[in-house]
Length: 351
Image (cartoon, rainbow, N blue to C red):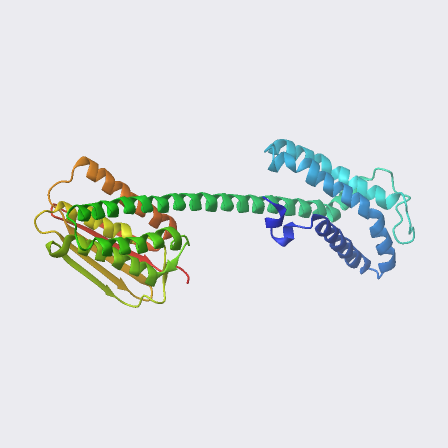
């Protein structure tokens, strides 16, 4: 992941490291300097000990910690940490002892070179620094990994959605062109109107439906245009009922998420029923959700190829619903001998 894509607290690495040590220095200076009001002595003593704290901290963070978070060698990490802690305490102790800047305040000159009680004391009072730094590094790695995984998941989701949506275009185009071809064969006077409506549909599908969400009003217009195309095609032979209730001006919806169900009703239902084809479409809209009901008559058992095409189309839109509305939709499909019914309820996302 590019560093510029990270949150600001993960960028400007040098400045954050500098701020960390300034905070550590001030924390120790104020804390220990306030015991006996020896702020001046503690200030210079803190500067003397600071290199040891820095060396010990970066040794743990960049030399030992990778065994745990990168190589997953936790036993090695534990053993090295057990060795590191007393060495770190000894380094701090020596930093106090050798300069001995203020013998009246901190007189370490009379202590042995290797004095276990004081070394242990320095571990207790200072080892929180490398632990804190290591915790920050672990959190940073976890957070960056989460960002990467989230970005990969979003890219994968976007690619799948684009693929699924792209399948709607040729599927719809071929079906409509077949209808247009049938009308040209009988030299229907409705052909120019159908071509005009078809161009409007294609303009919407190719150029205006690329956003994640579109105004519901525009989506409803496309549905009505398609229904009108089918009405012109079937003429009086089709019993078509189309009803919409509710306000369409204040909501947004995923593009082309409703059309496949309506198209399916005509292509795999009405077109196969040679006697009394019937299609009922009902859309109800309220402040929370949209409910779509599509019912169509069927005639006999569809052929194997028709079953396959119908299944692919429905599976396509079902997958889109799962990806776009994972917890805010309900879809039921009821297939009987003479009827096919779809009920879809989609609740609005944050608008």
